[in-house]
Length: 516
Image 1 (cartoon, rainbow, N blue to C red):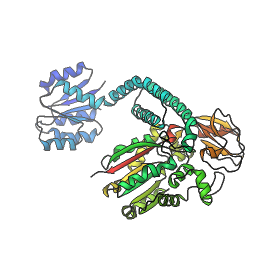
Image 2: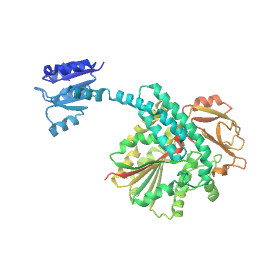
Image 3: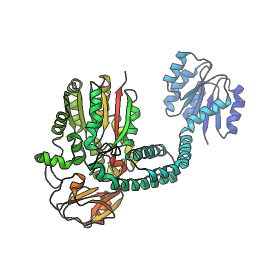
Image 4: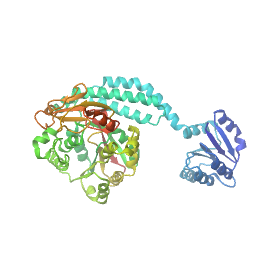
């Protein structure tokens, strides 16, 4: 039962209101002065306190901070006869949950109680009811989706529901949503398999913007239209993570564009990010600049020429922006960049590559405490939000807003939580990624993976003449038959990327305009 303390020097006159609330199932304690209120709040953990602003002796405004000292988390509703601005400012500044103007209406009091005590429960119940009502419509959407844009709309809708229902205590509805997301992902994988070759080899109205066309079709036009533009590419950044930090940026930016593009396969940094900066598919990079492309089985840094790729693409597209390029792999690099941020301000087009989220997702595999903190998508979002709030990245964004920079936030690919092993065999030269494999002696069930026996068909380089690629679907991850159980235990429920899923391929593309 919800316990409420009502403090008012005329509490006897309010007895009908107290009886009304009791009839609604609330337990009500009363007192008529601030001194008793502090003592009672110290002794009893009330769910809510209703406090009169005007009382003889100790006023409500004087009582409020003393109550907050002993019960800082307890919501307080202030009741006042006055609507004077200074009184309201003082009350709100003292962190009241709500205020009511006398004469008190019992239904108004009831509404305020529901808002402050039952709000989360009511929102959760309504969200659950709304999702149940929309379940059938969502199912029909992924059965009829025929374009990448259709799938983007569906992914946005499913992500919104995932966020809405994450606070619900109804585990059954979460299971239903999980099942529906999984089913939708299965259909998305079929959609990609049917269309991917055409997307890569033919351009028409149905072809989505992809990694290798992102700069020309989306980013350069924004930079052309704005004198100061910064591209922030956050490795491993998903749409739900964007949603988790969006509110923190509200005071600094307006969202001009909230959209998506399609990451190429494999959805791995080596392929997707090089394609973004070069404006070329990996096979073309390998042919044009063979000394700057390393295949999976070759030693060396596979993303060390990104700035050179970008400057080459700028030149080929006739863009003469004054450009900077910064890649931040470790936290100390972020602090160093902030100390030397002037070159960003002076540039027309700045690029900042931020690797922290990719490091975090991989650390989950290796570190037990990170694994515990990110046991599911909701907790991964929560950790992202917590990290961002205290990060150098947030500081940079505030600085960019102050200096009038338009900011583009995107990623090279997303990531997906894997739970279903797919067994294959391969030799020592086979790539190590859990969501795709490339090599010459792969043995697998073709019904369990998306197989590409001729890599040139999707503009990928071959390590040797007989190399092929296979890509995992949905929440699958690829393990070798040798020591399979060991790797299944180690990698199950970790976040991986490289394969085909909505989370990996449907990548957020956000344009932020600074507040004026």
